[in-house]
Image (cartoon, rainbow, N blue to C red; front, top):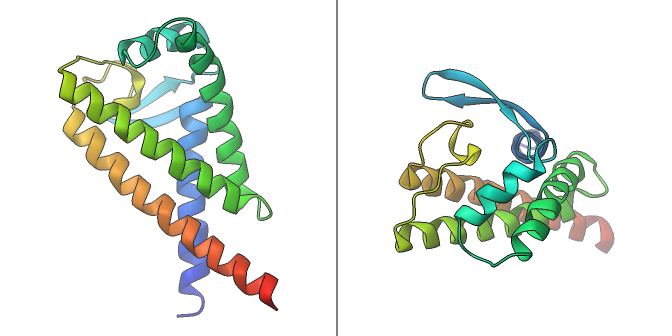
Length: 160
């Protein structure tokens, strides 16, 4: 049992790091027709501005600022999750970003917008908001569990 918690924590950290690094710099994701190569937001920031605008959450120039900053934050979060001395901050950042993205998806659904971006399983995947929200809620649960386990371990090491 003592080995299960560290193994679970490393598995969650690797999974979350993969999610955030894939979102930022691209990679292979599972789509309806198998694995699909995605282009990351860092590689095509101009296209990502259009995706940010589709959510209709902000006005310009804030859309452009978000499109330029979010990929870097995702990349740093993914790297932070992999490094032992920054994992707690990475888990906190992952939790915050997933919470904001879920809120944005719920907002899009409530307003009846049709958003088609690469965040639903590939660059051409249709926006099934129910599946997208449900999967992000599961990922958020993993991020929260990761944060709590890392925080608990941090408290133990600082109290000794």
